[in-house]
Image (spheres, rainbow, N blue to C red):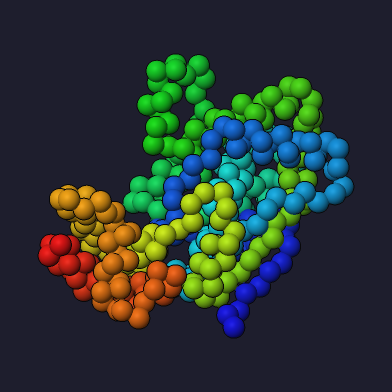
Length: 314
């Protein structure tokens, strides 16, 4: 049986612990939380902080998988919440640094980057080539707020930067909480935030176990399909080579378009992959497609070439 550890952890144990640095793997969908999600989060936090300050506030779960190759932990489930917590931390540091004591400031700074290496961020993204640089350069390191942004400029500024957009939303929500007295002492709130928020941390030491757990927990949207995982597995083999990575993305996009262009057949890439997998390995079944794609991913170049050949003959 695969080794899995399940523990209830305070937020500081997840975001400040020197042993845990995270990455959002390629197969994950983008960070998509919006103002409604952030508003609900802040409302819940403020109510708990105001009315039940001595109690723990349970805030869901996070599933992580060991990735020895990268010396980081893959975030299998909980990306939206974890990313939002870090954006909130960056926003508080930018707006209220002068009001924070040493302990609160240390909590925040160490949840953003390594205390011994300011270039090592706590969370990084592998979901697209530019996501991590956008997150790092506009939120983690150089967060600046402009006032009186015109509505016409708002969409242009934040169209491809959900991280920065949500920092602005957090600024608005925090300012409201300070003005109405819900949060009167930001230093006290930050200490409560790190010491009283609790999450269930599920650690998987095998990728297969992590994916199975993700399928069970992911009831907020469509679960990852085998094709999502295949793409990730293939990209994992070439992620250190930027040129090969670009070539792969181009080739993958062509494959997606090629599927759409098959005349007289209503098919998407996932359906095509399942047919290919059954053709290549008749013992496979759709229920265990994730196992089959793991075998395919070990010969990434051959797999992709075979897919193209099969599609061309359709």
